[in-house]
Image (tube, rainbow, N blue to C red; front, side):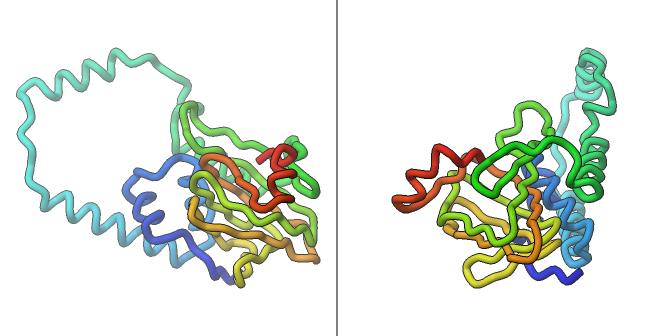
Length: 214
């Protein structure tokens, strides 16, 4: 697999520091599963972050800080580890997305489009879903009201002079405008993390907007 498109450096840095939202965390993890370059970048960023912590000025803590923290942990309600542990959730999702992308219910999202929502912990602002597009589908020109990160799992699409095939990651935000066209030879299946909504452009887009459920 030849990977030509990767998450932005700032996205990888946020992933390495643990500040990236859960939806994009899963997309980055899925991409890095097949991308040695991004695994190396994340490891380097982790090492740099650890070095900065060792040289940072130490803060003075209250004498009872440890006891207070332990008391707060004891007071927290116990939850099922399988549902609360983020690592377990991530591993399960990776297996679900990368090994069995065709399982589950697909819902109509627009002409030639099917969508399958994936579970995220409650309270997440972004959505995570699988998107399936028929061969040759040309999506209308559109932007987004937030970030959109798309990882190609199967097939390919093109926009803005670039082609995105299996393993490639399209890292976009509300400033990006594009009109993807799916390759004619194969159905395209993507893992998508999206904040906000898709916003179609032009007269046709405004007319079609109520019928596109992404």
